[in-house]
Image (cartoon, rainbow, N blue to C red; front, side, top):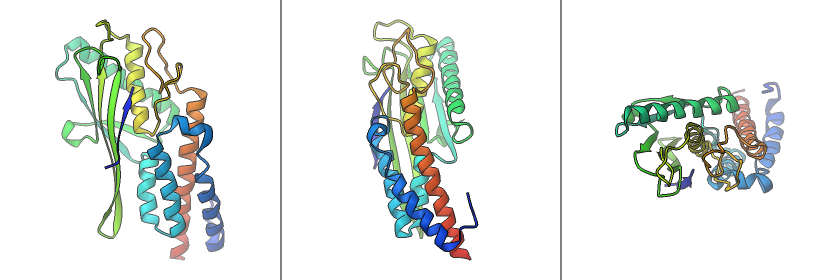
Length: 247
């Protein structure tokens, strides 16, 4: 099922030019490695490599479906379950989520859109625990799934996730609002393909009350930029290949 867990364009190339571009990008896509790997989920790197292989094999629809997962294209529909919370807790949780979305908007611009929807329409479900830290120690926890399957003569992809976040620390005290924001942003980072780093000072590192992280570290940003830019290049190659076939 692809399930995983985490805690806290030039159109004048012609046929030959498109083929040369494809070979270059296929080689480049496999370069997300080394220092980048510690910041990215292996599943996302694997999907990028599979997409490159599918482009090379001429299976452009399957490559596009895999790139939908890598680039998180389209709107991500998210529901917020705050039904068990007090009014004050609900306000804190919803503000933390809104600030986390704003943080990612500053990082990615309009590349990815997180949209709040009713639960029955959601791909991703956020829920806040009214007890202490999730699992007794984590500020957040997510289980997600990414799948690509054949649908008729084409391919489809699906992203889904269940996220649980804490409002209280392991000592029973309220987590600071800035820590709630980091926890929500951290879990959204998993949706985008970022992995836990365990490094203090990283957005995808541990949430430490009193020392919140409000943006990606330079290393995290470099890794995510590499993943997304190579995915975009490969998507352009798919487009060029389709155009060349129609000429």
